[in-house]
Length: 417
Image (cartoon, rainbow, N blue to C red):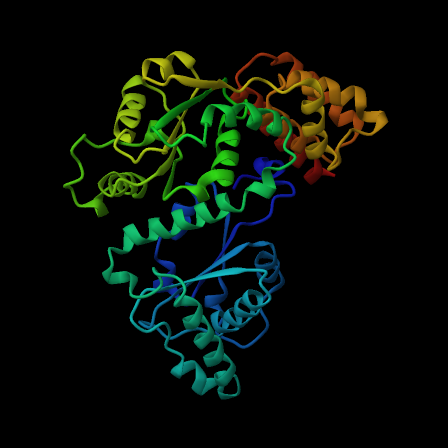
């Protein structure tokens, strides 16, 4: 990642810790499937360590920050000392309930520890105990064993989606307190009409880019998905190749996991919560809305688009506009990112109000500005806001370029001093 993006991740914790028993396990391209879902992963390199020593500080910090650890193993090569020592710590974290562990066994047996145990016999017992605990954890997760003969690539995507859903399911508490969310949810719940089970109800969310449409949908998903037999979140419909109407006869392993889930839900006539983000043409909207009519009554379908007309022409009768934040909501959100508190300090209040105005009261721009300005002095604030003022009304990508240029300039100046 370019250093010019570092301010965007200020204060953000890692999501997933990736641990590998060796190079063969490392070759499974799991990180990509996580990153495409917006999940930040740390790829451990402990497997490279052949000598006995405690795991390094950065790896330990990454484990502490992460919510999930994915442990990928193979018995096709000898396990390394570094991986086995890391596994001990992972299991300890799991037992303290500070980490969810998902083992992925690429072969019938998880690990080959005989060779390394002969070199370090005093560690053999504790390593084997950790492996036994890993196998016990694996029994709770259906995708753990023998991945190689179970359409490996498709299963990897399924596991990545499972992790994404895990984060979404626990997201309710993370979303609480977000500026304007209670106000939006009260109005949106009325449109959802969850007490009605007579029909498949389709609702549209619309509004300009960066206004918070997807955030509202994620909050809704986290709050109500548990009451449905199946729940599907299509992250980016505009980049998804939608199949033909009669695709159920196809090999489902060749389809996107979410589309395969839709086919399964239709076949079994399940009550479904389906959210489709990024709908950008009428054909997409119509396909999803019409296909969803085959779900069981009581299902809810939410389409997200920037234009209200697109939703209406796709046959959506119930639509909700996500407007810009109110002044008090915008200032509170900005303060959380710029000062990690609810309101700006008195000597930064005038500048904070100006920043919120330049952000157009849009949540994504407010978070961007706040994260960038966090920890900077007044002089830097003044210079940044002056440059942003020149770009007021421009697309957010143009503003992003200013941020990058300012950050690169700061890095150069710091290196010269």
